[in-house]
Image 1 (tube, rainbow, N blue to C red):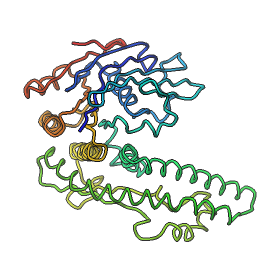
Image 2: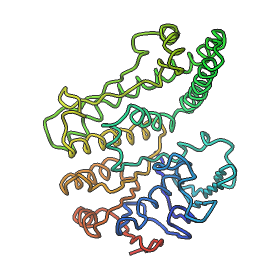
Image 3: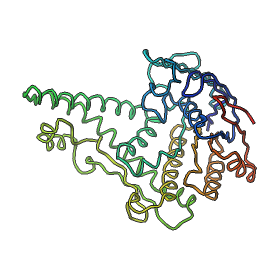
Image 4: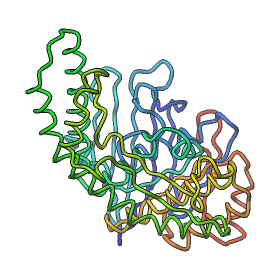
Length: 370
């Protein structure tokens, strides 16, 4: 089993970093500083280096430092004993370039998942309480990092879905409905939908008991956490779904059936967690889901992922924070990056347990090794 380690990084014009660099340890790396200092931005840059995209920004245009039109991330990432230089350059008016070991990657899917990593952040609670889109994202991100066929199926399915919806809008505008064209889209989407449905079903079935086990260790409570895969394809074939929704699609000018409507239902002791759980329970639940993601990635990539913990003390008491640190260290002993506004809170937990760590103060766009 090879471990992934980020040895050092250099940032240029990434969010509030004009130019900054740092070297990291193989254990816990703690980033402290005031709110707005750039702790989360640094965490996001390291996540970006590991997989070629931001965790927090949907588009690179939101990442450039004010007044700049290009950002660059350089890093040395080890996979086992091999140190691999990585460089990512993203110009505002050009194509993003990713190079690894001096070789330019022609597609992001060739790079995505090569250095597996998992982010746990306060916004992740929205995965549970908001739209199904966020819950699909967590599944898609995990499976795409270890299954290139899945990644390609998602990309192709979404591309055809967009074309189908555009065609429906154009047909309504022209008042000429082209049944043959719509059926051609459906035929192209069907095998992709089947691949995606199969992979998602297997994933949720596998991680369900794992999530419950991690929740039990984190929360130390008697509730049972359960995951369910909600999909229209559970009960009906894709082509039948599309045929049944044909008239509705014509009226609404969008595709009303398919795997883009899938959801992951989370229940706590048989009750919908969105309606039943406290903020602490929600936080423990999403962390348990993310830890199961780490286990899945390790199992199928045969690599120990890097773990990013952004502001984990938000809505978690110190006891649960300690249990989380124990779980990570004792289960994986992998590299971990942690942010906290309190200079002593996480450090105190790590020193109490004797876990290896390095501490950095984020201040004025600089990363200061303490």
